[in-house]
Every structure is written in C-alpha cells, then in structure tokens.
Amino acid sequence: MVESDRDVAPEIIGELLKFIYSDKAPSNLADIAALGLLNAAVKYQLTRLQCLCECALLKALSIQNARDVTIAAHLSNAKELKVKSLKWKSLFDI
Image (tube, rainbow, N blue to C red):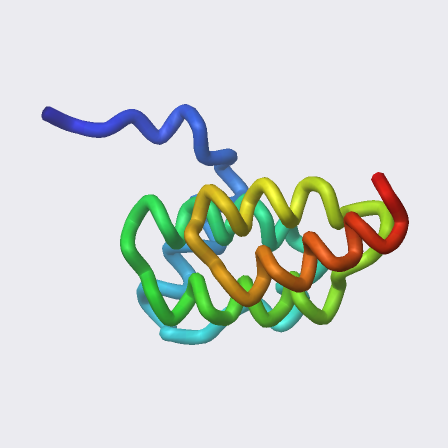
C-alpha cells in the first residue's frame, strides 16, 4: 500500500529531498518550519534529520512555540525536546 503525502507540505517535501540527496540540513532550519520537517523526518525514518530538527527547535524554543514544540516532541518521541518544552510550558503556564 502506498502512503499519502498529503499531510506533508510541498515545501517540506522539497527540503526533505534536498537533505536526502545532499545530506545537509537547510541553513535556515529554524525559519523553514522545523516542526513540519521534524514530522516528515520521523515519518520517513531519517534519524539524522530528526536530530538536526530537534536541535534547531531547542535553540528556537520560546513562549510562542512551546505548546506546538511539546506536541511535536511527544509525537516524534523526542525525549529531551519534550522535557525542555514542557519546562517552558509550565514556567509560563501556557
């Protein structure tokens, strides 16, 4: 059975393909929806890209994105990212 890519945005697919062919993460990872790229990396089992996305999300963690990062961390089983985003979330009670 073929999986549908409808849940992955075209720009994320583009960045995913660039990574697969070059083995380099986008230089502007934090700017290009690292959450979406993290989800795609998990879906396609790209462990290195998943780690790079997690690191970018840790660096960009803020009050504004803590809730979304916590959800993404839970869904992608990113333990460190989940712990740190939960600390932000509880610190500011968002």
